[in-house]
Image (cartoon, rainbow, N blue to C red; front, side, top):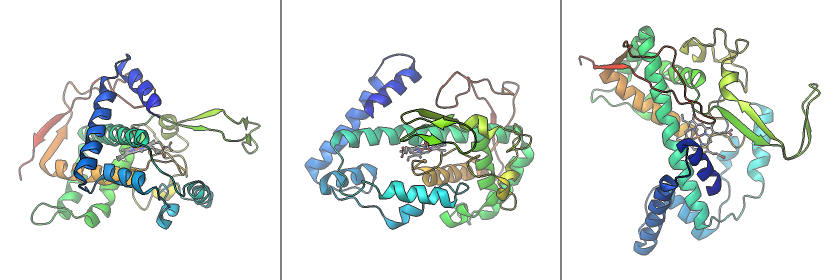
Length: 304
Ligand code: HEM
């Protein structure tokens, strides 16, 4: 796994410089060593991984079996999750190498993707003042007298959810998904048979921009994701977090984090288009993460 990460980072960086990975490896190694020495327990991700290493006893929580992407839920999906999550997961232990690999994936997958989502969201809000105003109204009506928003309150705000979902549709941070066929598989009546060992790629960005799934696909229109319209979205045509048993494990956390961040930012600041705002955006060539050459918007403090 680390070899793959190195390759990916080298491609991103455009050279074979391993300094970034080495920094993460060294930091994680040090954290693990210090904790082992002090025997102090922390309430965080690395501690969870260390506990798995120590106890060697991981069995799946019943609730995990029912997890799947909220708009991609179907019998087939749940069945495949059930199969995947019940296989070979008993008594899995992690080596230190695996702990390091997981920690790096979480650093990479966990930060860049959410930051990119919020960046694209501010861009769309800058271009669509009416949508920004509507979002501001919704958020303002939900905060308490201390300016705080509870988890329950955040989760029930339909327009905030719709704005982020539409951002993830129009600008999915991950461009593609990949799977390896574990067996020969005939694709319905298409005449196509996937061969065992073949890699299959799913162009998320392309699927999200097809007129037949999303009318007027290049328009930023959060209404598509409002509760009364959501049923129009065909399962597996909305894939910002992937799908199936190997979909994004950080999805719920990412949505919570992005919603909380956005709510606090929008309450205090307004985004707007400037002469330097590129419309449309100009992208760098990238095989994995969407990355514009530059993304400039104006920002001003709101009168409170
Ligand atoms: C807006 C934010 C995010 C987006 C758009 C995103 C997107 C994705 C996508 C498309 C995949 C591949 C899923 C598939 O192949 O079906 C993935 C996998 C993954 N993501 Fe995220 N992600 C986000 C945030 C996070 C966060 C916050 C974390 C961790 C805290 C995280 C951890 C992971 C991990 C560990 C995997 C690999 C899962 C596996 O292979 O089983 N992601 N993510």
